[in-house]
Each structure stands twice: as structure tokens, then as C-alpha cells.
Image 1 (cartoon, rainbow, N blue to C red):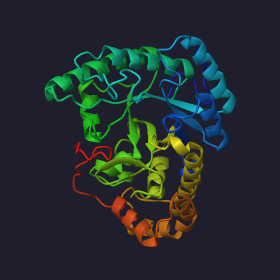
Image 2: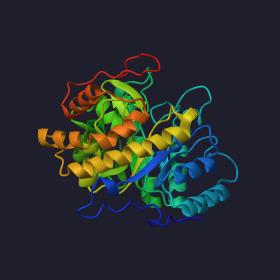
Image 3: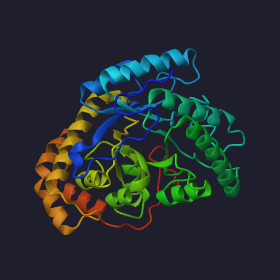
Image 4: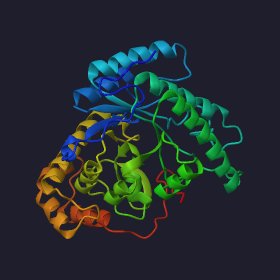
Length: 367
């Protein structure tokens, strides 16, 4: 059963923003992996009530488990619910222990037997088609120590080719996400993978704004400009250089008005979905603060327009003048000092040396 979303036809990518659109026209969403302690129906209601335009749905045990009985019926119920709430949708596939109760994210496309991962991704594509999802997002996985780099790469290309074929047949857009510490962790790696696949039309990119700050060689707004024509899904969060930790807005190093301006300038019409998977314990409050912050940042971006991708001195002045609007949202998440705000702005606006990324979970260096 296909349940078209009211904003688009099933499986199609969203239209680009109209000429002259600014950051206030961006469509904000929230990821259900940040509502892990809520029933899915309750999470959708809270997200819609807060004013979000859509949801990034991570298929998981309690959130449309693709391996549980009655999937067709549950998809139909969810489709009606999304339509009633007016929520757009992207499908995310980063559930931690859905496929293996002992090993996080396993198996990936890089393991000796990726059968269950491939079947999961095929099901995600079918679910995306039935629900009219704007994109189905997935990633490479961390290379197992016992798997040689070239073997891992060949497995990734082969697995992605299978998923691309399924998406092409279903009319679904794929967003492949570069993920710090994984075999494909940056935009350059995504380009290499897309070329190895023969540049297939359904194979777009999911861009996590925090990851750009974490390890990309360019300022964050330039990252958006670099892949604008292939951008099909955006995740948004704050982050610090070299540390792969998703942070609430205003607690990391990213200056958001220029980033939102870059998305608007790129004509991006898809969801910009908050990605805070470690904050489920306070999901409603965090989601409320997040939309307040992003709306203020979008207003600041519009007031400062036009903003150059690399954030020129003139743009910094304009953003500084609009800092009052963003300051209220910053105060809600802990209250940065003026010096900290300025340091974050300059940090995100500069081109940094290559980052060595570490995970805050273990302190282990992963890049």
C-alpha cells in the first residue's frame, strides 16, 4: 500500500526552494532517535505540536520495527498519522541494536555476512516508497579490524549497488551519510563512492551539519555549497572540532545563521532535522529549545542576507547585530558568554587543519 505524503508524490525528492527564498523558509524536522523513550505516535504528536514540519524516522524496535509482524498494516496506520499531522518524512537506518543484540550497528555492509543489513536496507526502501519518504538515509559502517581496507571497500560498493538498484526500482531517493570513524566519513569519501557506483541518480548525500564542523576541511557553510546539487537530507546539531559528539545548539562551536543561509541559497527544500540521539531523557524540552534556537538563527540569517559561504567580515558584523535574536535560545541551553559566542563564530568560519576525531564514549581516536 502506498500512502503519499500530501507535500509530494511517493518516493520523490522535495522541490528546491523558490528563487528569493531565505533561511526562514527552511523546513525543520526532528529525529525520532532523540525520542527513544516515547511511543512513536506520542513522539510524532509532540514534534508536530512544537511546530516542526517533519520527522526523521529511525526504524527501530519501538519505532516501526521493519522485522515485526503486521508491517503492511503498521505502515498504513503511520501514513495516515503523518498525513493528519502534516509531517514530512525521511527514513533513517542508524538503529544501534536492531540487527544484533550484542553488537552496535552490526552487521554492516562491510562484515563477512552483510545479508541482514542488506535486507534491512531493502525493507527501509520499501517502507520509504510506501510512505512517500523524501529520502532513505544510510551509511557505510566501521571497518572491522579483521577486514582488509580494499576488501571492505569492495564490499561497500557491492552492497550500495544492491541498495541503489532497489531504490531505483521503487522510485526512492537515497541519502548516503558520511559518518566520522566509518569507512566513508567525509564528503571526499562520498564522492569517491558515488563515482565507484557510476554516479547513479538515486544516490544523493545526507549531510550532518555537526560532522562538517567535526572533520571537514572547509567552513561549514562551504560544505553545504560543495555538495548542494546532491543534497537530499540534512541533519543538524552542534559539534566541536575533532570530537564526534552531537550537542544541543549553542553548546558547540558552530555559528548557525551562515549555515542556514547557505542551505537556503543552495535551494535546498528538504527537511533540516535535529539529530540529538543522546537526549531522549529530556526529549520534549530539548526539541522545544531546538526549534526556538533554529527559528532565531533563521531570522538572523535572513536579516544578515546575503551571507558569503566563507563568512566574510561584513557577514560577521551582520550576524553579530542579529545575535540578540539567537541569544535567547542560547541562554535556554546554558548561556554562552559573548566571548564564547565570538570564539565559536570565528572557529566555525575558519578553515582548520585536518581533524583527528575522537569519540566521547570511549576516548578512542577513530579518525
